[in-house]
Length: 119
Image (cartoon, rainbow, N blue to C red; front, side, top):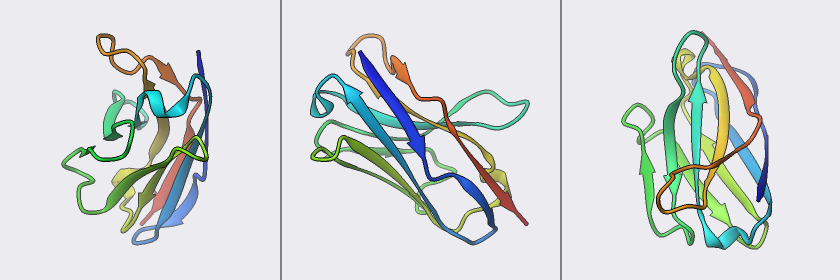
């Protein structure tokens, strides 16, 4: 079992930065990969970024590449999403997720943290 709690969302203006955090508890944090997803009103949830267990491999959606950076600190059981040069289209509920299974993909999810970017 993995419990995930996101924080760091808020209301910002276009061009601003935010850093989201996700604190994990339960299963040993360094045993699994982590990811960030987002869902805007009326749209499906979409992948934003992923990171493997030790941070050596990172993956990004094309829409955020070059602006967002995913990282993790295994000593703090925390994964981060640094978001720079935010745009109104980045407005969404952001979720972190844990990928503890090699066959089932992301199988644990947090409750989400809202990011709103005004123009």
